[in-house]
Image 1 (spheres, one colour):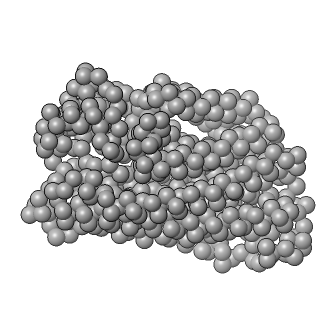
Image 2 (cartoon, chains in turn green, brown; image 1 turned 90 degrees about the horizontal axis):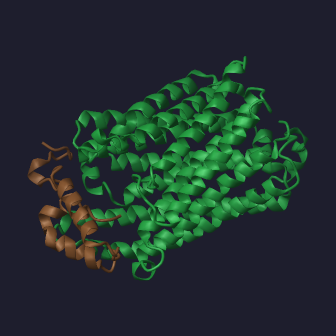
Image 3 (cartoon, one colour; image 1 turned 45 degrees about the vertical axis):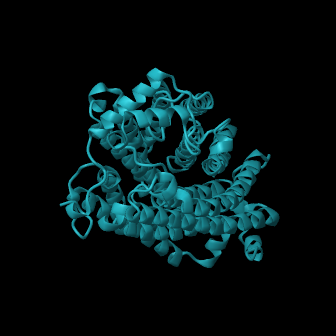
Length: 459
Length: 68
């Protein structure tokens, strides 16, 4: 892999900065939720929440775009031809996100859930994404190489992000907001499908990494992988049904979409398991850090599948919908699956396995702390959700504050796990950030001596 | 995770809501809204209230959780 220009490094650093922002604001939000009487005076929960959720969404989308931009140069053999449009995208995208945060800081809201900024900024984000699409698809069109499956996944994700982002802003047209049910249905449908869009970008990146780490192109060419792609595409277009549980719709819609969604996760786990079994020890050790993050994504996908299966049973969902169990599902998806794959990818780009033993030991320690703290974090949310669901169902006439009284004890455990998780993930972020700042270039993967790495494998 | 406000208008009434919004509670801050903004919020929740009922009686639900 050739040396990357410096602006890629800065863009990756911006993405990592968004992850750090999401983590710190998440901690502040949880503290403001537990101690409202103190925080309401200067940093209320209603101001922190959109800050936190937008930073998390922007981290996932920005890091996915950054990884795709870097990999496409190698896949399409296309370096330096689209520098101008790439640079323009980066400037516009970063500028738009900073403008969003400024609006939140000055309490200027106006959008809808997760995208609660004044809608004029949606235009800026839309233009930035169109520039990114121009840059990506220009290279795609000119490349004469046969397109591997991960390229189709990236392309699908990039295109459908545009569609779902526009759909998410349909409320700006008066007809769509003339009925509350109509508007809420479209909002949740759009956000549900958008998850499918960025999953295509992230799962495509995971597939690319598997091919590179194992040096086995058949992983992205076999029938199972193509079936996974088409199932993911179906999921992207039709899995939104289970996001609409509490608005009127037919049961068959939620049941069908639920089956589609669950099958995709199962196949994803199966593909990673297949990759693990085919990978020889030497290749595994050569890329041990990205490999471990990919394996973590597999285990979290399995845990999330189990949770999703349980919470989607209609009679269970009747009580658990809108409780902390839904939050646990979202947190495991975004941290356990998406963030793990993106950290694997950035680690691979940084050639982190060729760095000093001290750096690798540090990342390894932070990695294990991340996994354990995420376990406690998710479990405390599930327990909080069960208590809330039980008390709402059994004590129908008590006030919301009375329902929440015993839940708050568990929320304190959640905050403790959140601090632990944030410190662990921030350690990885700071380490990656510093590696991106170092004078060493992100290149010459082949120079990393396999023999040396094998000697150091037990870090 | 906040409370479900879909039917708060029909369950509590506009006067209760106005007082709640105006003074806040231990959990919900006083947003210092003026009368017109408070009225706008109450009207919005009255509109939401008309969209349907979130509490479905147990007798209207099959044992596997789907509404009859």
